[in-house]
Length: 410
Image (cartoon, rainbow, N blue to C red; front, side, top):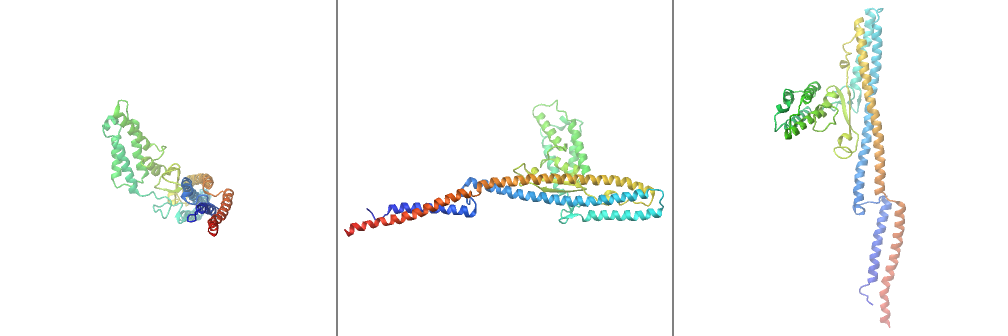
């Protein structure tokens, strides 16, 4: 019998320490509601949970962005709705003024209202805004309106980079080998001249002309007589030029097709345009940035662009001209309203999808990280009993050496 080292007490003390730690973890899980509070609890689970939390927070903001986009579009559509009402009234006045029963005096009175209504259209165009940004009357200042076409120098740099990619494909063989009289050399030279000159690269008509020339050159390329490296290079060149001039191709970050869509189809020189970030990521994950962005584009206007600022009802001929112009403009504005409506409908589906992703991802994260209270309570009760038992046994183990006194006392 030894008294210097109470092995039983040491074993019991170690068990008590372990039980105390286990009960502490159970208390932590029950008090925080989290099964994983630190990496040591579950390293893999923590990594998965944090990634899901990143997505959940991103999805929440993406949903809010989509809702903000709908709010902005509704403001724009509301302004256009009132403009349509005004133009309908102007058309009534024009039809009335076109009747030969009126004299110039009556037409003058009708024209007074017509001109005031044109001024009101201008006022609506200038004052319809969301968060201080104009929704209808485009300007290049991104702080004043939706629709700035971006840094023109940057666009020019992209054009230049694209030209470099195209010409690099022709290294190793003569363009005349495949071009002949197709004009591909002239088309490339024209693109280079346009980039190097001090041009407005937002000029959609110029860009479209360049792309049309390239398309004609592509269609005229004959690769039937080529083999080996020349054939491979020619096919690569033809494919790249085809992507550039094909506005139905998926835009890529280094392709002129994106600039084509920006400057030609969307006519950024006279359009209101802005990008909504409707996804939780950008350049990676869930389809890269094209799956996380939505570009809203519609034609901006003012009485000048509508052709109403020069119209009047002072004569019968002027009145009939105004009717024709109003018919065109009403149709155009209605088309813009319809386009805005399609964007709103799409965003509503986007919100539904993002909300579904959000709560399903939250459910998955909860299963990984949240405490199962039934299980945790059972574990806590077990650990509590073990702590009490180990404490009692430690007291018993500490009394065992006292039996040595009976030997001393005889």
